[in-house]
Length: 208
Image (cartoon, rainbow, N blue to C red):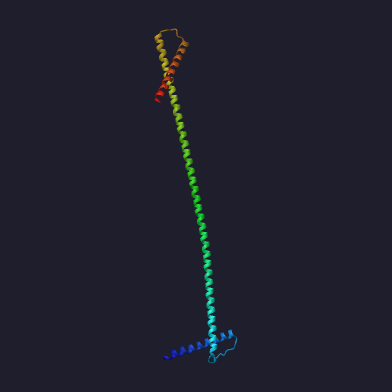
């Protein structure tokens, strides 16, 4: 029972070895182009060495070709990857530069617009304030002049009337007609106006 597996493995190994030897003989026959016996018992040792050498050479050539192909493929893949990565990096850098330039331009334009708007607004406000102050000064000066003129006229007329009445009362003369009174009133008015002007000028100079 224990020997059956060993016999089966030995039989399988013998069959496999015979198949390898026949395959090697066929390979040698193909490469050396000479007839070889198919019986392993009559197979010469020189032929076995030739078969082994040919198989080793074939294996080495196949391995070398495979290694060369793998190296070439790896180099090509690396070159392609490097080229693709370089192109992607260049595109990304270009996009970044364009975006940064666009942002800078937009920021500069916004700043310039804001500065211009602020300057225009400040200028408009300043002009409006100056015009308002000037108008207010004109109104104040006009009102002051008008009030002063009215006050001066009223004062002058009151003084004229008082002077005329006092003069008539003191003179007790009936020789004054309407023309004489008008002339006298005008003289008194002129004198009063001159006095008022002198008083105003002197007061202004003393204030300065």
